[in-house]
Image 1 (cartoon, helix red, strand yellow):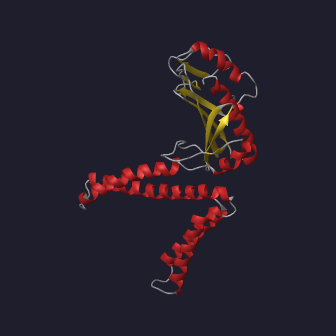
Image 2 (cartoon, helix red, strand yellow):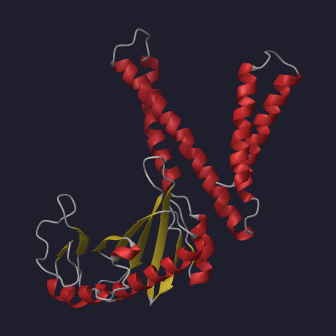
Image 3 (cartoon, one colour):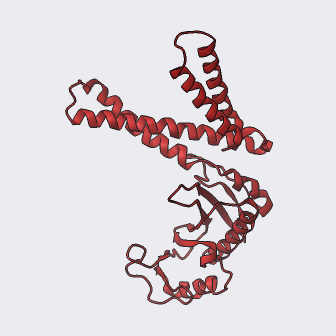
Length: 291
């Protein structure tokens, strides 16, 4: 969110407070407060476009529109849930006529919140796409690239990347997750799942030993091939599948090979460019072995 949008939000709040607690009735005060709230709302909607490259403005506006859908959907979901709970708790007010609308609001709210949250394009990823030889993806629920931000061909493999940033709070530091999808031919029909060992992370029936993959559970239907390709991917100290790059898991199923990474802290544009480029390169190199 840009500083213009933050300022717009503050102006909206000030305008609403002025309307609620200022002199009642029509007059200069109420007119000014309504005008301030309208100005703040306009800044919230269009403020993100200031200082943004022309080619990114469409994505920024689309992101704000989807955020607005998510916010409205959240309140619709909460209101629908509240009406349903009050009705089944035995409300003294007859809410039966409103019950169908409550269920519709709840269902539409869940769908809208998911849509508005999942299909936004990360602007920082769009900025670095061209610098690392990739391009903006066709993001959307009915688009071929789904939730992914950027895409391209690396090592002869189609690669898509999605970045999710969590701002953090008092008790939780900021963090980000990067998901890579490589589309492969997989003519042998190999299935592979690698995840951290542990009570929740381990996989029943996993391979007993895979060199260089200590503390990870590996499950596959083709152990011979995996023993040939997986150790080489992690044997280098600088491999992206080590702790330094926040590797979490990978899964090959059908023609999709997904890799998940996550780190604490903010995604910095300069360091992020090298980070994403190296990860997409090594993920594509591994995925190519299954093409």
